[in-house]
Image (cartoon, rainbow, N blue to C red; front, top):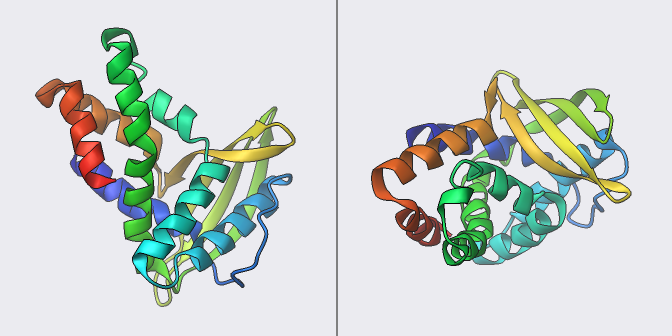
Length: 192
């Protein structure tokens, strides 16, 4: 899963910016949502990893379209798997994503996030940001948001031109072709 390792290592940089731990996430305005999500995501990951992962799990479950993301990644395989396999995948997916994101976020504690532009797209929005580590170059991160009720949730990220959903979907496809669907679920459980 080589592309996923590169891409998933880049995902967390979009969730960082220094802010007080008590920041509230405002998901009604796309720019404010990304900014407050970044602030809260970073501050939640301070301290011991076990406690940080618990806080981050709550943020991810609340503000990322986890079910839709997981569904899109196996869209090609959905007609070929049983209901039991699908249920096992859905149970393993949130912890897999949480574990992958949380483990890599610590490397970007000093980075800053700047909202550059928002493009409204009907019920969705794209928020272009720049993420910069001290002494480093700015990396463009596009947050694709989808409207859910009166607010937004994160549907996808594009980091330095790499669409994370497309890359992760390709990695899942490759893994399933080589090892089978059940082995993918076992792999996901081992990473969660």
